[in-house]
Image (tube, rainbow, N blue to C red; front, side, top):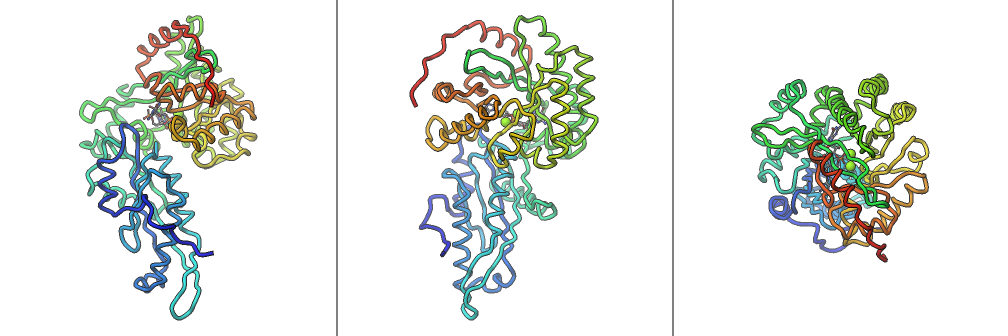
Length: 442
Ligand code: C2E
Ligand code: MG
Ligand code: MG
């Protein structure tokens, strides 16, 4: 069957319009990503670039891009061999990487084209994708954006996945990456990093049950440095072990100091792939729990689906060891790409954290509501708790309660805050003893 773009889509814009949209058309504090897709169309086709069939192939390329992008995303055919994409709602570099991988897979399938002399022929692209994930309100200038994504694209060509997404330095733009790397090492040694806590609310009884630990680095010149960038640099530069150790010890110190509370909060910690492949890490956690005298079930470890698929065997082994210790395990950013029912059966999980990109749409979008409801039902079918991330308003809270979601986290309740502030917030919130709103009809 003929494959071509169905008419002119609002998603396809000119390169200039796309850059303008990146600079001025994005909303608030959410993240977005700009991708440069080098198509690498087969040589033969490049030679025929002016022919009718080459144009036909471009229309097939457009159709495939259209089928991957969301309504709010934009793309531009920047040249006969390069496409630019603006992912308006890519909540993290990980989301952009997954979208890039899906785009690449779609574009790599063979194209049927009609050649003037030889008739039907199969053509190929070997796409390489580079991108920059940035906070929407802090989009770099146009030229910097294109240069950064092009640079990532060049490096992507040397990777197995052929997709490389970098994280913009945001307000720390004045600091170059090399300096951040050097200073991060010193900051880790000198205790200049902080761990902030974002409350997690039980939607059934309305109380705050715990928090997620998120790293913060208030840099004297660069403002608050993006945590995703800290984690990325720490992982690439062999500092992730020290970072995780710092977060773990800070969290355990607070958990110990709160153990006299009648109902003490639980805390979850994000793990990275490097930690997952370190066989000594579970015993390190056990020693840390012993040192601080904290009950293991007050600690949850968050792993993303992407981390698990990188090395399923080590991940499974690692998770079983954490479980044997008595700690809880949550699957973070659930649903953004690798979800397989096999994982839910195979891995010892306690909680699914439904990714904020789905939760955000619940207030306005029927498809998002269906997806989130299905995710909650899947969690319950596997006897796991469902936690919705990125809850930003009361309407979403009501809908989630009605959908039987177990817990929620998001700006509607609070942003991540310093642990001392968190304790006061936790006490005040749980004292409110608020009557739960009646279930609303969907
Ligand atoms: P994550 O683990 O999925 O953390 C949730 C992110 O969503 C946090 O961003 C949080 O501030 C943000 N968030 C929470 N509620 C809302 C909301 O209602 N609306 C919006 N728009 N965003 C919300 P943050 O702190 O910037 O962290 C980003 C990512 O950096 C984290 O994603 C995690 O992958 C990584 N990260 C943060 N701290 C650590 C750490 O200590 N270790 C490791 N390995 N990674 C970390
Ligand atoms: Mg997390
Ligand atoms: Mg998450």
